[in-house]
Length: 55
Picture 1 (cartoon, rainbow, N blue to C red):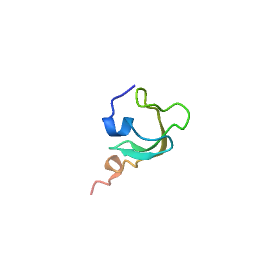
Picture 2: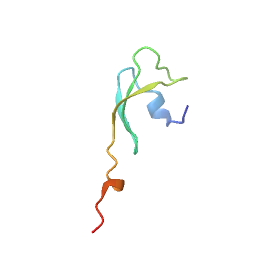
Picture 3: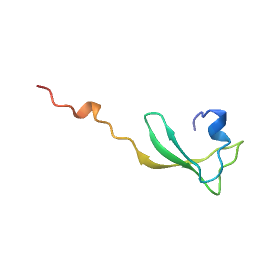
Picture 4: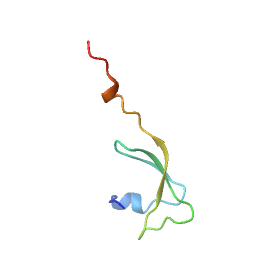
């Protein structure tokens, strides 16, 4: 469960979008509706912040 801006809730089924710092998502073609948006994750974003070498 989460919150999304109104423009994302009005996305057409199969529209793709990026949620900040989370990844890329697609509006579910069967279950997505403006009153109850459903997004499925396509790709996560890499987190390289914790992987930096300390010199």
